[in-house]
Image (cartoon, rainbow, N blue to C red):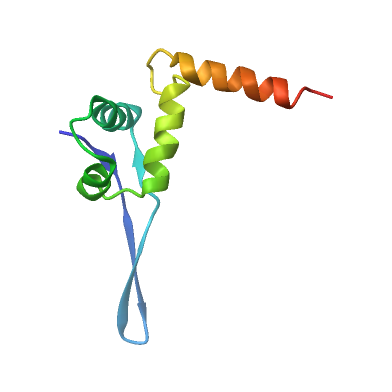
Amino acid sequence: MLEYQTGSLALKEGGKDLVMRTQRRFRPEFRRQVIEELLSGVSSPAQLIRRYEISSGLLYHWRKQYAKGAFENPPDQTAALEEQGRDQRFPPP
């Protein structure tokens, strides 16, 4: 089962209950599993976004991180080439 941590803080204001959610924190194993499911073609991005209640921006951010090897996985060769190209376009001063 995929897991993530979340929390909430309940407040009372003017007789109304307000619930503020704290920022969720996803484990690297969870992120890797979601991205590997995306890359395998088993699920579409829309399906993953709905199933795990994450934003599309977060999904694509994780995909970029995965390509760089941020989730205890070997880096993707295309990510290394992109970084190399970025370095050539913006050389250090």
